[in-house]
Image (cartoon, rainbow, N blue to C red; front, side, top):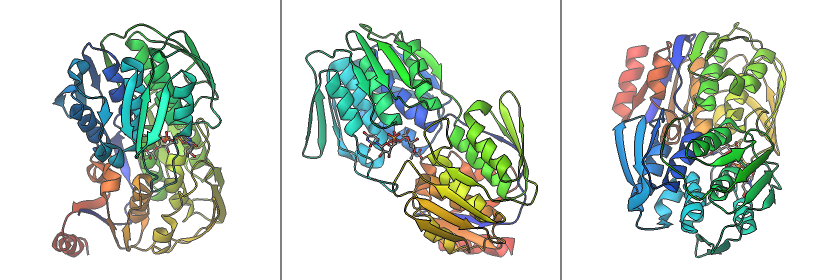
Length: 430
Ligand code: EPZ
């Protein structure tokens, strides 16, 4: 198993380039099978989750070429099966986007039921509600979700909860349904908008993405397209928090500043200076961080995927802060690992009460999930001494060349895969 090893204490300075949005890419790749023509998608992040999704699609017969790590050429005419193996959904929940895409195009699909995961039970009742509203029969048995419909008819669907995945899955199926579908209380995340724009570039008729009412007029078929995925706001925010906690000065390039408004606003509250450009954001840490209060909310609120990173920064801010995780029921597991680095955080239900400490101390910790793993890296960058992070496969799910990009702005970090390599790093930096 590989580890990250970090010698903390450097202020991060310089420029970092952000890649394509993982959570947009996963849905867009799946949606590409909704046409029999060729689709080219670029600005893909070369991360584990994207590679697993591509594997799941090749497994059912989709022809995929990869001219370079950030580009795929997809042609779905060779699909031979409409059933996605459990091995893929076990690795990434987002394989369930193939349900919406296959149901829309073939009126039939089968995907293994996604289990819970590191941050909560993650039910799919809203996806099922949407498919049933359009006339699909949905059977949940033997750990499988099987959907099929003689005809898919547009309908008015109210989402009991704001759900990114359910909004996207229903939007995909509705694209090729008969008549009009309205999704009320829809998710407004930038990646929902990106999927809608992608489908419209294939000839879909989707209006209102990015608002809480999305209107889809079903069309008979979709055509090929070439499309570029939006920048990853979560990767961008992760680097912004790294700059803040190390008192650095980093220009985060190839971003859409509007997508980062909630993060920028909270970093300003915590004492940082933020300068926005057309496609970049500069974060200047002023050495002293101050407490603030955060509640995670659906976009445009503060993103739950930035909650661990924010908590780590507040853990060394002056005063008492609170972070309220309103989206997932179990997203503070990493706090126990952070306590081993000296943090003083009490978790009461879905609220973390954070008493700022002088600084973190390096320790050996384990990444419990993707974003918490990235947050522990941020803690290591600011910690005194050396931090070793195990289970970094979680982090590699969503961050491309993470250690390289951090080194590019002055971090002392290496990826190792043996105790000997760890010892050599420690000797070298001591
Ligand atoms: C997406 O997950 C992201 N994953 C998550 O990012 C992100 O944290 C989440 O949206 C919220 O922004 C991908 O896009 C691949 P939801 P998703 O449906 O779609 C409840 C990362 O770090 N819910 O918006 O699964 C659910 O339990 C990952 O990249 C239902 O109750 O999230 C949660 O409480 C982690 N029934 C809330 O809604 C349903 O049918 C929001 O979940 C669906 C969801």
